[in-house]
Length: 198
Image (cartoon, rainbow, N blue to C red; front, side):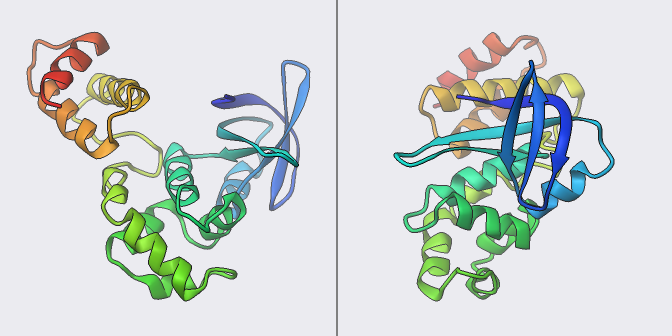
């Protein structure tokens, strides 16, 4: 799994960029919004998601973590592949996708080329409950906790709990409850306390 790439931006187009990291040039597919964010940069950092198929290996990149989170949710819907997810995220910002799905606005999704009525409705039905776990994320991908330490602890604890198989929504509630205890200062403590609430 290629989780992220940091390196020199060799070239960029509206649909993909080439980033050199460790002497290797990675072709990274992305949305229009990420393309716009890369303009004028020599060195870049992208959150990534690596997809291996029978006929291709594709690396998708995202300037903001929240965009990757939304991409992964969209890609989990039957009938919505990575290219459709990228089209949606080129048409709408990640925060707008969260809002549209949460509000059940299938008509907005249908305005994206290639997204028909059935697919739009399926996205709403499948993701309406799941997407709420992303609503608290800002466009920078940071979770809005009171301090930088809390934000880092929460993000790290959430990642660990998701790897353990817990749903993000329930994990978020458990971690927030754990962080209410002011004596907690490490990720391990947060995870242990959160597990008591799951």
